[in-house]
Length: 109
Image (tube, rainbow, N blue to C red; front, top):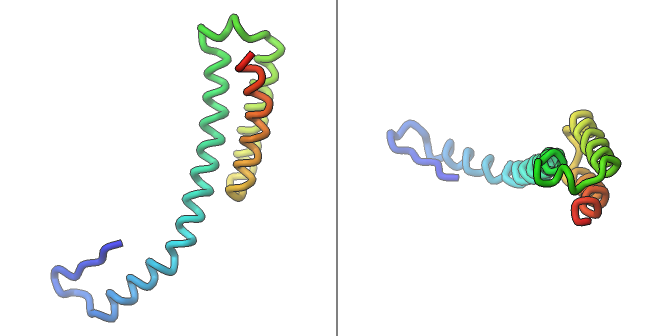
């Protein structure tokens, strides 16, 4: 973070205070950023899987029961995300691993 005093409006103490506050909240900001990234990764994976099973090239290669299993797992995961938007990073990562455990074996057949 760069704080400049181009026009001389801030005192040295005010600048020092702003820098200290920025450093103080940096760790918290990083934690929130990582949580949001994990949430977005899970959500993107869900929609990617939904698109994959409906893709014209894949439609005929995946059995209907497998499509239903992926669709159900993705829908349940999206609902979980909606109900747990404040979950921790580890929870989103765990949920993604669960979903990958369902989807990957089907997609790689």
